[in-house]
Image (cartoon, rainbow, N blue to C red; front, top):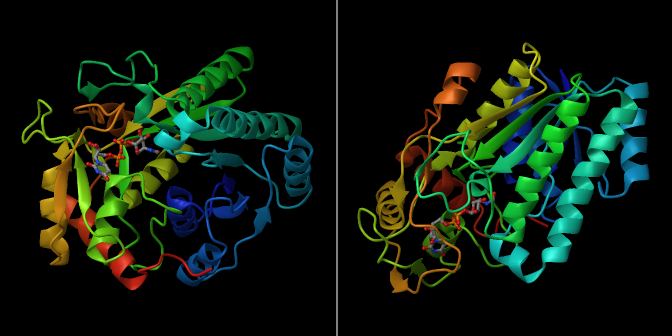
Length: 342
Ligand code: WQD
């Protein structure tokens, strides 16, 4: 298949691009590079051994997006879209709700309308476990109700609803919603990885920046949760497993009649903050100084995936271990202490 990957220069997008090419698919990237550096593309081409067509575009600009897809359809054609593009920082979304609703909803609506106009109906959406909200049941299954505790999460809930309504209105669509748990790790080459701009919001990039000397110490946000050691528990999934889940979903959508499907992409295991810190120290040989800090507003105590549906319907499961996640994260960060070059 020839796949348009929006946000393809981003963390999960870039790893998925590499696996799509490795699986024999063709790829076109559309990215505005607002949260990714252009040097990612050169790294991808180096690893894939091919040149990758890239459109630098603001996907919230409908005319530009429609023109992009129409032009591609006049050329080699687009068979499917994997939509990663969007803002994704929980805390920032609380401070800038309008930016998040405007960007995440506009880009998605613009891409969907351009697909409809261009005759493309296969769409894989980058959703998130955050749509499970504050459900007291820690193990998340796809049939649980969705809600959110922050504007970022609400954009994911709203987009999932938009996609459901679209599928009801026109069953020629083949829509796959992928609910990610906590993506970590990097391609084993160490040439691509997670490179957050500014202050890292998420645990693993903060840990790797402490390990490489860019940060002094990790703040552990609370050790008084009702968990194995009092710190927050999450389902960390290697980004390479996550990317593989996209390929499995894409290929499955070509075989089923359902216009709308949803799958968890997680390992099914929960790991605490302190367990992650210990695993990283063991994998990297670097001690991670930390202090216990107050809980972060909005944080949940614990959640993890029930990954059975994706295994049953996609034949997919996560295979990389916690040690793989830590070793690959460290290789990326130690080889690229300041992230991607400008
Ligand atoms: C994990 C654990 C923190 C940083 C969010 C989004 C989700 C997805 C991933 C986008 C928690 C603790 C963290 C730190 C810490 N985002 N922590 N010190 O909040 O589970 O999920 O990011 O796709 O949609 O909701 O991930 O990595 O921020 O936190 O103690 O400096 O690490 O309290 O227990 P989270 P996280």
